[in-house]
Length: 110
Length: 113
Image 1: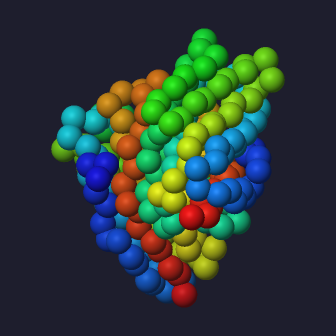
Image 2: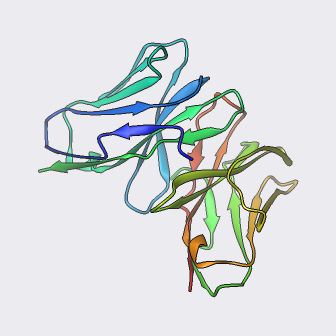
């Protein structure tokens, strides 16, 4: 079963706009990671935030983590057509398993 | 290119058959993970190996087994295949345990007819 639930399931925005995706998880975590998957391809690691961190930036990506609410968000600023993909959060618990969320399918409209 | 290779890319086989999927991790990575991705179940963690030893087990069926060899490549064996086993199977590797990000291979698309 999925540990994480992502919201929204699908999102379409105009190129240049910001995209925000949310993730909720169920148990305590060691870290939370975000991955991108282009259709039918392997996942690509985007960013990792540790449980003692609240916010992290990487280029146009901004990730926040609220362990009290067991939630995280991924913000992609100034979106581009190449950002069209599915985005997954993955929670790493103490048992070393990485449990993926259901994913958000992001479409950037040129 | 993540540096993780998987073969074959596509596999079509009949119910009841057995197949072997192969994965070569990134150079230097000791951990190998296997995942199954299907439309109805999403991305499911199957099993992890670290330096040849089984480290963690997820939703892996008894019909499935895996191993990691001394050269660190890994194989996932799927037997008595059912239609519902049709999915994308991904291998990922990481340099260590727990806190490290994973690097995914391109996947093997298995179709059971």
